[in-house]
Each structure stands twice: as C-alpha cells, then as structure tokens.
Image (cartoon, rainbow, N blue to C red; front, side, top):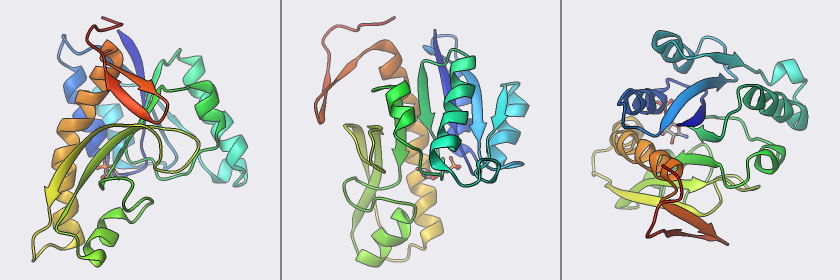
Length: 207
Ligand code: GRF
C-alpha cells in the first residue's frame, strides 16, 4: 500500500474523489496525510470527516519565504513516511526542494490541456481565448509551474453559454475520475517517466 499525501487549498472535491477511491480495498494507496495552507478550508473538513491526519502549513507562518514554506511541508511528509504526493488544488507555488525530496513522485491535476493555460486562471483564460475544447491534465511535477511529464489528459467541450463556474464544474467532474486513476497507476507502477515523456509499462513494477 503506497502512502499518499494530498495537498489542497480549496473546497477539496478532488481530495474527496481520492478518499472515495481509497475507500475501496483494492485501491493501491492509503491517504495518510492531507496538508493545506488554508486553515478551515473544505479540504481539511473532508479529511477530518474521513479520519485522515491533517497538517496546516501557512505561507504567513513562514514569512512568505518559499523555501522555508516548502521545507516545512516536506518535513510533514517525511514524518509520515509519505511516498507519493498528489497536488489537488494546492494554490501555492512550491520551491524545487519538494521535487528533490520526491523525484517523479508528485502528481498534479490541472484544469486545462497543458501546455495551454498554465497557472491559477486556466478556466477563465480558456473561455477568454474562445477555445472550443479544453480539459484536464494530470502530470508529474517538475521544477516549473504546471509543467512536467504528462501522464494523462481528457477533453471537455466548451459550450457557448458556459460561465467559468459551469465549465469548471464539468472539468472537475472529469478530474474526479482521471486523477484517482492516475494516482493508482503510479502506485501500481504502470507507467514510467522517460525524460519529458511518460510511457506505459507492459508489466507493473509495484503491486
Ligand atoms: C481543480 O480544478 C484543480 O485542477 C485546480 O483547482 C481545482 C481544485 O478543486 N488546480 P477542488 O478544491 O478539488 O474542488
């Protein structure tokens, strides 16, 4: 069983999807820890309700020092022997220290088809650009923001009447299915990172 930590800042619906998936005895990960930078956020409430340990690490507590903020999070992860980290709507940019601590072991879900629309406003920017198709990307995290080898993508059609809210809701529904699946694939060793690309393996490495 892979020890998974989920980092989240918001309502935590993606955390909810991971918790639901992990409740199945056949799921290869155990949600061992939820870390948030936002005291009282929905993600923390979901973790509490599921009986999952939580840690709050705020930006202010570390004087806005990205390296110290990241190091404090890595410390929380290491103390629980976390093996895999899922960024599920974690809205702070982390220092490369977390990638050094967890090389190829951090997954992020992003609400666009990367490399289009990186950053915190992906849904609004897709609407403003007038694209007819956007979607979800789950990728391995590297040193850059919303960047790193792409594991899986799924499309979401943009409707003429979409608002940022209606579009994001449909995108999230896709994330809720795709992200737990990719997290399980990582845990089962069903893909490997080869440079900038991810390749499916014929034979799984882990069980
Ligand atoms: C998701 O769409 C995620 O991709 C983005 O922020 C949103 C978080 O939603 N980075 P939630 O907190 O999981 O509901």
